[in-house]
Image (cartoon, rainbow, N blue to C red):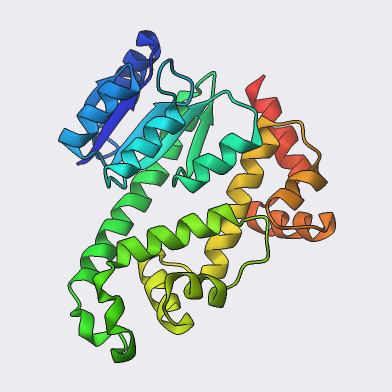
Length: 263
């Protein structure tokens, strides 16, 4: 069973999250509930949850600060943010911290359940791939010329890569640039990256750009051209083409759909 931590300063929402969702049917168990970031950190340190549902807006320590502290503890829990915020900076920071999913208030529990099932699949897939990858002797895949980098774990290298990517989503970044940042060859970087994320570097960058774009389309009134430029697509036509291919609809159609659903 995957362990879940629920974090929200509003007791009714917290209780509803615990009671309404079919946790056991989803192969999950609520390992803890917290009404503040500080309590959530304490529970997370003890329980090491696989998944965290966290409100972004809480007093004293907001959701993003909490997730940052979670990462400082070395916990790589998947995070789903419950949000009402409408600023690009929050989207950028959330992605930098590894937040892949979010859901808007008021909460639609069927939609939330669907997202949780998808995240559960991703977590189990990652755990399986990590177990498989870690079972392979490292000398079989690490080039001898780069053995000096064995001191850095794969997780550390990939965390650095992800941070660099998310901080440069608006720029034209490539494999060689990121590999140079890590101090390893491009071919070795591609091997580690594909094994860790089960997708290529280009696929990952495109996915993160699309997630940032979707967040901004829903949570801001910025123009589609501005949003596209903010995630690295400086021509609206090309941004629309990539978005359409990835999501099955244009940015405008996606924005209109999500706003209609929120009414």
